[in-house]
Length: 276
Image (tube, rainbow, N blue to C red; front, side):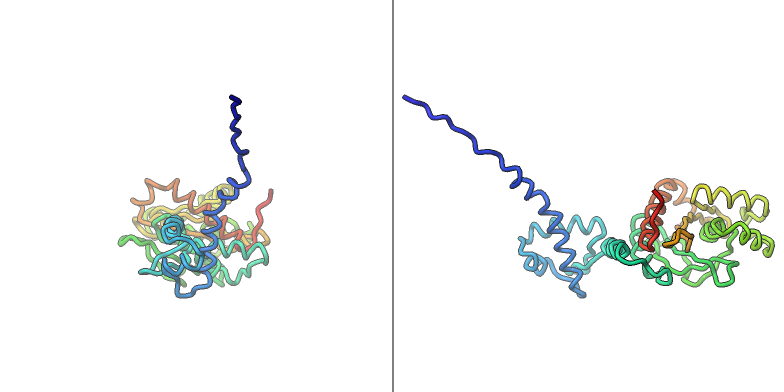
């Protein structure tokens, strides 16, 4: 009796591969639907809109919630800060951002940074007189004990993290004009007022890209500052994270990394393209 050889059907790699992008595409589809819904959408509405079972949509939404791309208000889903930040970056690829809109451009990034770091963050810019730094945008920490300051508040350039960042990246001649005009005041016993040491500190900030303070203006408060660059590569403002010193010190490396990532993202959104 002749035996019949059973041949397995050829593997259809294309068919398998076509399944792989389903989850990312469905996630993008969900974000697209939410972008069109000002008041948000419920799970049932989203499932109907993307023609997908609610259980599958819920699994995707959980991942998007965790990443900050979606937020849940009651029973309605809305776009999260991470989605708005991504939209800003995508838009900046098509047209240069107007530096005058820096606070609005930076805001979604600030909210994401505040959530990830757990601390209060600011954008600090030069005041009109170029003698102080002024807060132009912020996102507050959710901690009951946190650093608090209002938009419009000013800080000395020589003793604040944002101010030191801005001062360090000014032209040398402008730096010297500033140092010649001011008489540094000691706000605490830790305030650096010696101009020779200030000059050395500014050189270090320019080399590392990171400004720090610890009890310089307020006891118990530490802060980090990093430059935000515009389309021409010039420093347009500073990104600042400030918090109680006892909470900052154990996690300073993580906070500096987060600050750097968000400073780079905001700079790209402003139209800055790093060399190389």
